Length: 80
Length: 237
Image (cartoon, rainbow over all chains, first blue to last red; front, side, top):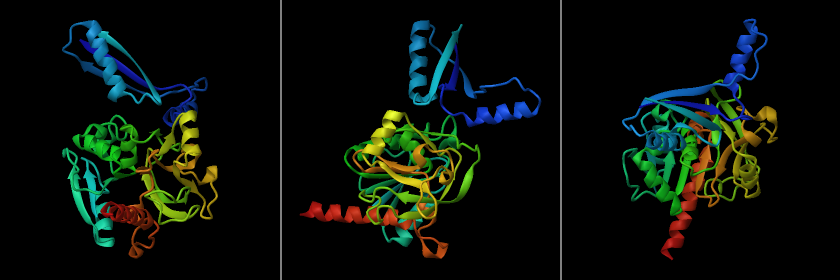
């Protein structure tokens, strides 16, 4: 089973990288862009075949390591 | 005193810390590889600056799971002195030994330069050699030093005098312009509630000897040694 995990900054947390990209897009002529937010995307293979159990595992991974829940939130999809 | 300096893969200020404690201040120093599981015989622990695990994922996020960190947590819970400098501060935050988190610097730049910090609380094991309100010139060198925490935690830190250092001007004014990285409330260093764990972004080990042109950082290490010596005397009684 494959897990696809997105970790993003929570709303309201300053994202200097997002701001820099927004300015760069603006200077390239993309004038209608706002709220650029940068996050992380991770993929991993799980040996677990039970979706419910896999979900518990992925949640634990996110809470313990993959996201810092003070400033970040996460979402995931399980496939296969 | 015997000072333990933890070495993670990617630590790069560990030898500077050893030099200050051993060669400048005449203490014993034990280098502790991150795979160690015991801190027996150590009077204080330093988590040095650097780029543990290449700063992968988030600064300090992987180092906090090094075997030695269990021992550091145990040591701290028993009242042992723990000082985290720069990456060491980031590791303490990720490990939950101090509240909050580091965001990328507001400017996105890696900033390596002198800063001034105001000693907001001189009644700690790390600052007893300073005066309250004293301004220290100590350099920073980081990309992720933009301290953040939620408003409730921040209010608690302020109310309990847990903010130990604030970025300021050379004459001690805490202004937004004096903050190099966007840190909330100009925070450069915080302690835990029990006052035995301190994290700070500036590098006192880089300015602890007259030959280097600045020895403001030495006060931090001298404070720790003075505290430990008093504790030992009290223990003998």
